Amino acid sequence: MDADLTNRSKEIAKRLKQLGDSLDYSAKQQEIKVIELKMGEPDFWNDNESAQKTVMDLKGLKAIVGPMNELTGSAEDMSAMLEMAEEDDSIAAEVAAEIQRLEKIIDDLELKALLNGPNDSAGAILSINARDGGTDANDWADMLLRMYSAWAVGEDYKIELLDRQDNDEAGINHASIAIRGPMAYGYLKGEEGMHRLVRISPFNSEGKRQTSFAAVSVAPEIDDSIVVNIEDKDVRIDTYRASGAGGQHVNKTDSAVRLTHVPTNTVVQCQNERSQHQNKETAFKMLRAKIARIEEDRREAEEARKYETQARTGFGSQIRNYFLHPDQRVKDARTGHYVGSFNSVMDGSELQGFLDAFLMLKAGKIEASS
Image (cartoon, rainbow, N blue to C red; front, side, top):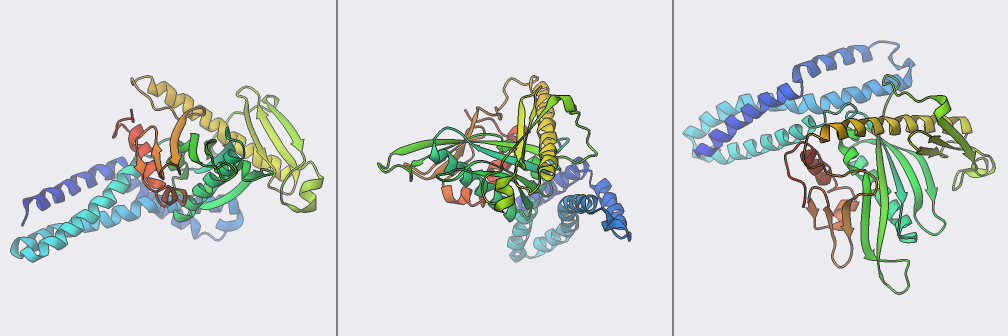
């Protein structure tokens, strides 16, 4: 039998032990037991919002503990498989395939271990704003909205539309969605920044090449257990008439709400709910999320001063280029991650590679693209 298989098996055992420590595997197993007991109580669903959060917490824990359980059992079986392969070379191919499968699971879990920020386990509030590029930019913003929604569906996350402002000609001026599921914010927070599209404009009769920009903002959807200090005197509240679909009520009352946090000049808005009260409540949740992101960025900036280089991820920076002309490709400006199929990124199926590459960049496992 190839000695390489034995060495790879030993490496799996080593990485598995390190993963168990970094992911706090034993503690998570206990947490699952506690939550499952809590869910069995007769009054568990009396507070639906709290119950839904608990269910999401359980799902997040099982996303780690489940694969770890499988790895632990399979690693124990590997010793017996190696012994059999020593006596029968025909089993070596089966052993190699199993080792490759386990290595893939470990790779995925090691990426999850990088999601150790204070809000990484939370859901995400993702906002998209059309920038330079006229109608093409509005269309581009709508394309990005569909891309992230498709990715979320593929990851079995839940999506809620918080706010959407359609453009009169095509696409959107602005939209905000909540994406809820294990580690949604941890995966998506690296998407914040400017996204650039180059294509032949479908809105230009001369068929000229057009460059369009859309800005993506991502904040953690935090619950009331996390303290975010926002004083009433620092928030300006504006109401206005909602636009777009929604029936007579939406279009005839000042139900839409815009909040401005004056000290940070942070603006959020919501018009998707039917009442001003509901829009105001949702807008304040969005504002708390934005302020939490600002505080997180401040802490990360202080930490980044220890290093010589730091990838830019804020507004005004071009984090990724999407090309439909002269060829179809997508390349990240920070990590260098490249996909030669525009459509496979836009349908969400190959977006995860960009998210993973940014996690590895932040963890120092890959170098920034020059």
